[in-house]
Amino acid sequence: MKTIKISTIGLFFLLLANTTFAQDKWSAELRPNINFATKDLDNAELKTGFGFEAAIGYRFMPHLGAYVGWGWNQFKSDNNSFAGNDVDFEETGYTFGLQFIHPINNSTLSYLIRAGGVYNHIETENSAGDITADSGHGLGWELGVGLNVDLGSNWHLRPQVGYRALSRDIEIGNTTTDVDLNYVALGVGISKTF
View 1 (spheres, rainbow, N blue to C red):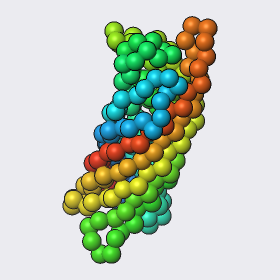
View 2 (view 1 turned 60 degrees about the horizontal axis):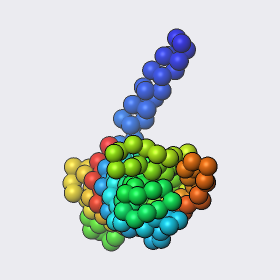
View 3 (view 1 turned 90 degrees about the horizontal axis):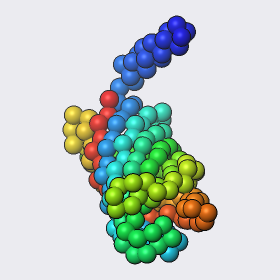
């Protein structure tokens, strides 16, 4: 236990020193999304969804960096589907990948390209708010493009459009259904570099 505490404290000071000597390499972003499913989830017709993502990034080259984050997205479905009546589908989990941010001429605008993966699961939730099924986590992928607008004082506005794809099996009772959750996400993030 003592070794774990010493290692944790050492890692904290290493990250602190790295941040001190490498200004503006780290970023934190919060981005709400409006989501549009590109196809039905088996026989469940998905309505427009919403969600958000929180991510931390590290720029290891002048314009290229890595990101990791966590997100939550919800889609409603009123029709009678494989999961029942009046069921919400929630996708939650982790994101990771690379992002490329490059200035446009000498302006405060940059273009942004993201490519990465998701490690998410899909839950079904009934009208009472009870989780009725959980697919378990699995790998998917995401792509995104957008703008990075420099607001000054290391704050940035990041409007983006992205595409996500996740295939999972959902077991309800004795029936297993293979589902593909594919959607376009429109969001505007706020980011701080430090």
